[in-house]
Length: 96
Image (cartoon, rainbow, N blue to C red; front, side, top):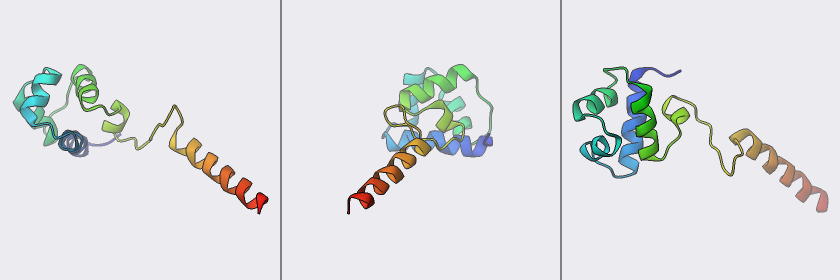
């Protein structure tokens, strides 16, 4: 699991990517501005309830906020996608 500082950086990064101001995220996720600010600065622990609301609002998985860098596309994980790409390359080589 990641530490509070990296967790806060991930929240800030996702918020900025979506061009959402801190106050707007607070309103959308129903949390106070001082609490969000403290989270983004790694100064406080947060309740799971707030975590779910933040992830939903920013349209990122909770697992990503917690430090997992797994990407899922159509239900496939990063590893599964890489395996499919390797298999595709193998098929292309056999056809040549």
